[in-house]
View (cartoon, rainbow, N blue to C red):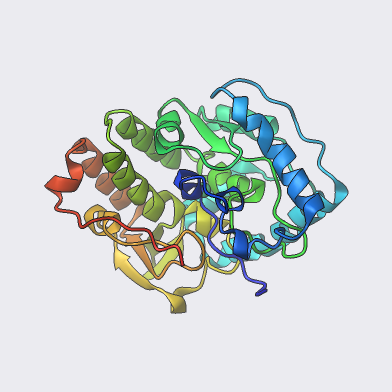
Length: 302
Ligand SMILES: [Fe+2]
């Protein structure tokens, strides 16, 4: 198993529940043959089955091994962020004040987010339908999981875990400008009714808030949450094509639910990202796929 992080995105929560869906791409999951890990992972995911958005839920008594995994990722991501993340992320990360030595509870993260941007985590256990996942953002709730990746490969996860949600979305949601984009996408999701329109929106979300880049001093820098939580992918510029951000192009580009994304989109600036998403969402409706003449959408599950 390569010791490289791969994509970890909340967009996985939009994928249908299948036999392998419980673990993301199960064949790549380092915990798939570890019954004790699977029991722990599922025990931490189970309360999400009955969770109502915005209601309280129990804290987790994380084990020392889980805290050790957190510390390993924290040590790796700090230098990676300084080398490859954009200025807005670095500033937001400083504000987020993520603990180095232990996994923070969701309630602790949410208290900070509420103070800074009005956001809070709400409990996810894995797959969350587009309508709920995206729509909750309008109301200041982001679906986040509590379980931790497998300890054997701390820099790798084939599914979103608490590290992805804190180091990716938690940093975003500490920044008012990024938080406003989450609310914008959430508001837009709540204006449409069709799965097709939600799928188009989720793809734009994927290539911006999960995998987005922004140009700084002529170089692409990461702001996407999946990149921020992916030690192996955040600076892997030699492995991908970088195009200027264009929502229609993003919505018609196949993406990988695991592994490196072959194509990423870079905004010219954070203001360009805000203007582009603002214009796209202002004209968004249930007919968006037809109006943009989008090709039949497919997902590369390689
Ligand atoms: Fe995510």
